[in-house]
Image 1 (tube, rainbow, N blue to C red):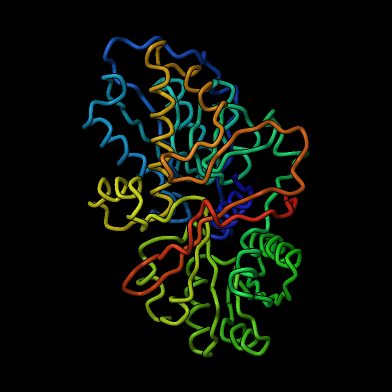
Image 2 (image 1 turned 90 degrees about the vertical axis):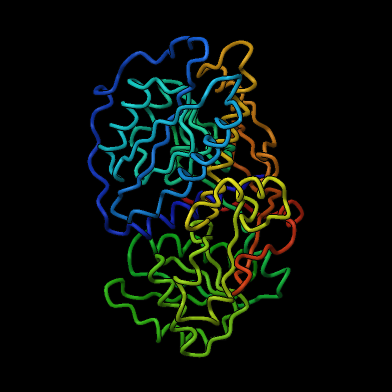
Length: 428
């Protein structure tokens, strides 16, 4: 079963990266109103798919490209093996620059001009064109939930699934729900009872920190809250206080640079943690470089998510991914999720070969998705249209720990690391 907290973590991570970055104004929807029906494909004509990525956003060039790179690797491999029903998949990529204006322009180009049959692995800082994609009935498959679009509109299918009605209003009356399984895991598996939450004195950072604090308290933790000035953060003072308070877990609402500085301060103050917990966006092979001057904290890094560890090459689907991406300089969990999104589109398109691969046929397959795993890469995904939000859910999670010389080491089997946990409301 899927968990909405993954969306909250993804949104928070991006907001913290962006912090005060402007995302641009939005053009009127009328500027992009055209016919939405996809023309019948010609025999052996390629299947066009679109990938929208905020590759040159204010956040930085590498922050959003992982899903795109993973999806491209899948399609390259697929085409080398004959495509879908003998038809190549032609990828039309668009960089929206991280702005609402740029996102509208990408949607217009891909949906109205290039007539793509679907979007895949969307990773947009400001998905301003989401309503246009939905109105055109273009299936958007396996996108990263940065914002509330994937819990708002029909025909949009986020990588983590959704239980929300998706009738034009986000979630249930503007609220989404996330579980407490991450906090339950560390309490059950490691006996943790005291946890710290470190944030900036900035609105996005503080809001996410409050959500984490609520979840920890719901699971019975003593919670230590620390806030630092965004412009002049004193991480040494935070580290000293965490040592005095006896915190064994540290969660954060910081950007990547802040995390590295916090880790260095924790090492300098000789703070010994059970876990410094991070999210899926920071689940990358660059940890050794990013935390090069904090070896103790680096080896206390844990990541949680909803997809199989990209280092878990004992699993055949992961081996396929790693073999196809061996030329990439770095690897990340977002790359694996982009690969899974492309595989999802492929499975949907293959189901349509006999009657014709159209937007409508692919969309029907997606809307009926129940328990999809991309060959074991994802925890089972579903798209429901529940009238009322869940109060509790049986949820599972993928857990990995960084170890020098080994990389990210899986901690247990994700399909069996499961809990019945309460669902807490939040506004995206």
